[in-house]
Amino acid sequence: MEKAIKTYSLHNFRSIHQISALPEELIKDIDVVGRVLPFKTNNYVVDELIDWRHPESDPLFTMNFPKREMLFKKHYATVRKLLNANASQEIMEKKIRKIRLSLNPNPAGQEHNIPYLDEIKLNGMQHKYPETLLFFPSQGQTCHAYCTFCFRWPQFSGMSSLKFAMKEAVLLFKYLSIHKEITDILFTGGDPMVMSASVLESYILPLLKPEFNHIRSIRIGTKSLAYWPYRFLTDKDSDDIIRLFEQISNSGRNLSIQAHFSHPVELSTEAVRQAILRIRSTGAQIRTQSPILRNINDKSELWKQLWRKQVDLGCIPYYMFVPRDTGAKHFFELPLEKCWHVFRKAYHQVSGICRTVRGPSMSDHAGKIQILGVQEIKGEKVFVLRFLQGRNPLWVDIPFFAEYDPKASWFNQLKPAFGEEKFFFEVGNGVCVF
Image (tube, rainbow, N blue to C red; front, side, top):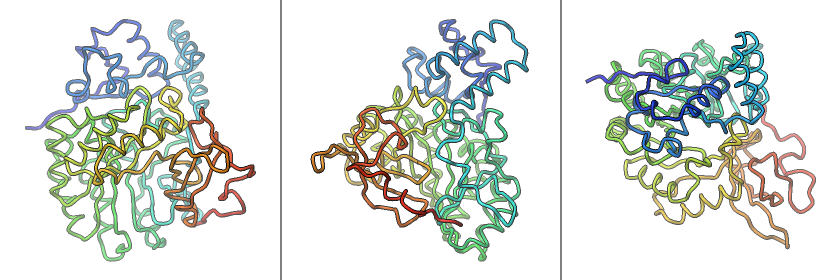
């Protein structure tokens, strides 16, 4: 039987029947912060994932509902004052846009990843690494629910100048026909799984033709398994989605669903278990990833449970990320050393089959940088780092070192160790040009 999705946003979140138990001040906070950072959730999250007995300390509530602390005090005060004064929409929008621009809405130099086709700037693509192309279908630039920590929050906030999206499939196919070095295409967003099966087919089925034999892996980045598993079970075109997945697998390509799970609760329902089984029956892989987040999953025991449960369900633990320096990062961030300790302790407690996971990893402008540890070398305490991916492939897997900084929470806060002025990849011009 089809289960209908009901969406909650700023316009109707008070209609959630459990919300009446929340303190009025918390409801006001949701209203204030939701004006700046995007807010949307749905009936599956509300009815099946959140523990309404203790909502303020519940991780799934925090992942879906804005909190006062997610804005800096001065920004919160500005918006609340405007609301209390019934400020005009024009004034409100002007102030909110200024606040949003101060929250680093385009982190890690994403604008430098946008490729060109002749003189056409392909705003719906990112080509940072030679073998992998990210594609942002315009119909997939929303999600079933919005994570409060999402680094792509500007996509959902009306900041059109910072939005990555492309409707013209012909430009995608032309770019891929020229760039034979590309073996992997990642459909991302937003969430591609909000698209209808027919729209998703229009992008994917042409890639199965002989002229695109260099495309060996098709990846779909999605939070739908965690926030709306019925997408693969009872939506009106769920069967069409499953048939599409089977076509991809039967073509000899690898289909990898890049699933976002940030807490064991997201793996606890019968719906998500059935959705995972149905996807895996098509021959697709499910690889899992999440940032490590203060107030959500900053304990090794939770990661141990997460990885173990994922493997039990036939998924492949893939990445632990450090949250990017954007949006509400100050609320979720942890020192890099803490991230490493949580990862290492959890990694010690699982079997080898769970140790496919890599992290903690920072998706920096230069590439994906993994924290390998904290060590003392030549009498100096340092971070040991390496590239898992780099703008220049020659950088990958070369260990390098940064001065130890107990407060650092992102790569741009680190300095080269041993008195060096620059990191090895900053010397000369090692950037690949596509």
